[in-house]
Image 1 (spheres, rainbow, N blue to C red):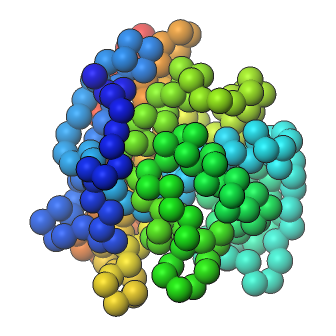
Image 2 (cartoon, helix red, strand yellow; image 1 turned 45 degrees about the vertical axis):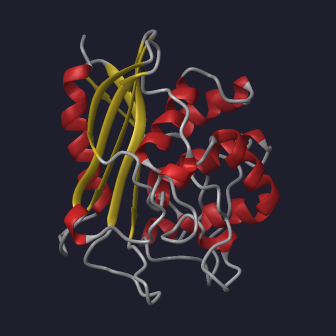
Image 3 (tube, rainbow, N blue to C red; image 1 turned 90 degrees about the vertical axis):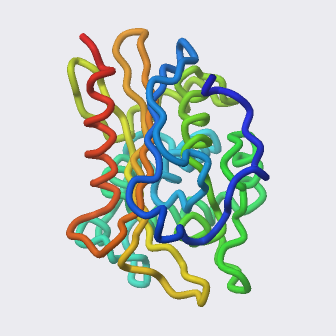
Length: 266
């Protein structure tokens, strides 16, 4: 059954995937209500940087901790020196809804700095979130700025799925307000009468010499779908094997939605 306990020691925590594993790494789809796997393909125990999929977990933490108070608050202004590589949507005032919609890194960094490492570690332990390592790059003391961005924090597709299943079944130690507000701010779309919520993620892996391999980025898409009392949870992890146009996370999204749609029946 897909909701079995997971032993962290069993998984790779390598900083990069060998060339033989490039391309699709894992696709997972499950029914969390019936505790039933629907699709499992690839190496779903492989741990990789969560990249921006960490925003899902971070949103739960920030709402529960009182940092995020509603879908439009806090609204924080962009300042010079903030991460700005995401373009114009990062260079303006941002609220929780836009944070997730446009995947604004500096907003995440303000949240993690407010929370601090101790609270992040406590929530990560409660969530069984991968290797729970917020130390950041070795010797740089930058965990609060980039632990989840091709750095120390790693998670496998199976572990992502476990968290999503616990979330949709309301098995996490969270308030009803956190469940409701996190759902409100998560990007979603309608497919076959189902509301599909999800978060992309993309990051360039670090090589052994500390550089970034910009030809072979990781891409994630993780989320859940709901219709009435029915639920589906899904995860896709891939790594490009060459430089390609567009975002790897968007390719992961397209891949898993094609696989998911047959399981979204009317």
